[in-house]
Image (tube, rainbow, N blue to C red; front, side, top):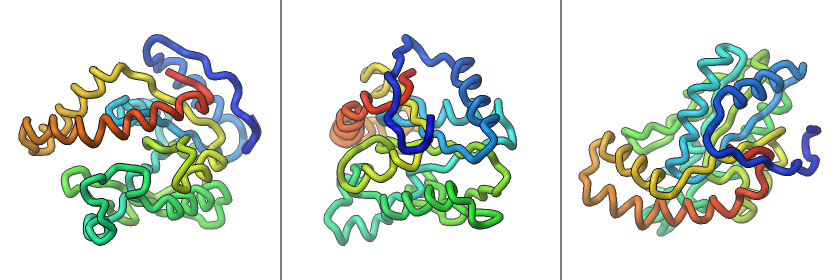
Length: 216
């Protein structure tokens, strides 16, 4: 599909078919020019897991750039009065994210450095992910790649293709609580955050599902 054209009808699958994802990613790599693939879906849908699988399959032909690297710092969220909603669409530097994707598409420099979000620190770390000019496929993952408000509408135009990961809410909740526990949170607080933050954001992300090129 040409950049900026309307997405085709998305086909729905019952479960994530990694073999099909790998095949399609190979086609993007073989296209002959830099391609940017988006992986989106609600919190807990398995975006990071799919990205790891694609990287393992493609090796040096792909690199992952995280939307979460553009989280606003906690101090700035406190100043804006948004700290309790961290993870909502207006708690990211969306313009900075769009600028990075534009640089990655235009390839003006031998290497472009992208930030990475450290879940242990709950903060973005600048200059963490080098993207060399000769890498044919950039994979970017995040909740709001297909969101159409708060400035996010500029992101989808920078993607050649975007996949939506569709997972039942109960499974997403289980994964999210487990992830928070792994990072040292206590069970009661984990469930509270999942219910009051992650699930609310997930419902918002679900509404972007029809705009995906493919649904897995």
